[in-house]
Length: 119
Image 1: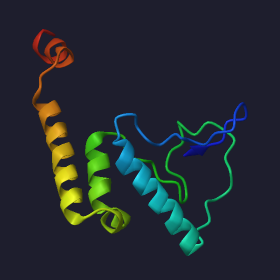
Image 2: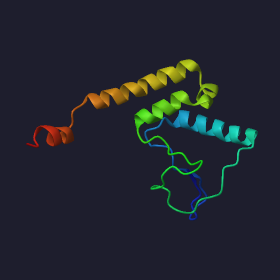
Image 3: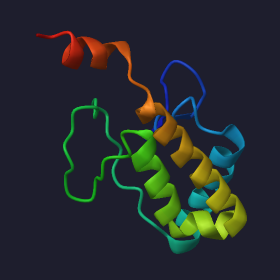
Image 4: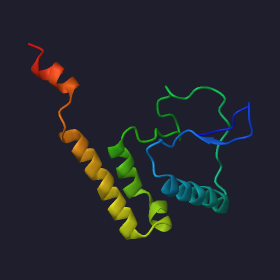
């Protein structure tokens, strides 16, 4: 999830989507890091290989693959409720759920060509 590039002094968080809210993401990442330090959590051994095609293995769990999975994970995470007020969690999750629902109400060109014009 975190990458330390060899060509420059930086830390990259490869798990955050560019559509994520920067402020909420930064607050939650900081809280998660502090929680890990406080609880003495072991981050595991470094991985120096591509992990994009890994299936779930051992303690490794795949991150959400779409907005719906991310909203469900956000709602279910106990740390989220420690970091943010309940009203913010509910309002933000409801807003993102609405975005997911709106997107899936739209019939796009792919659906039209696949299901309507295929015969």
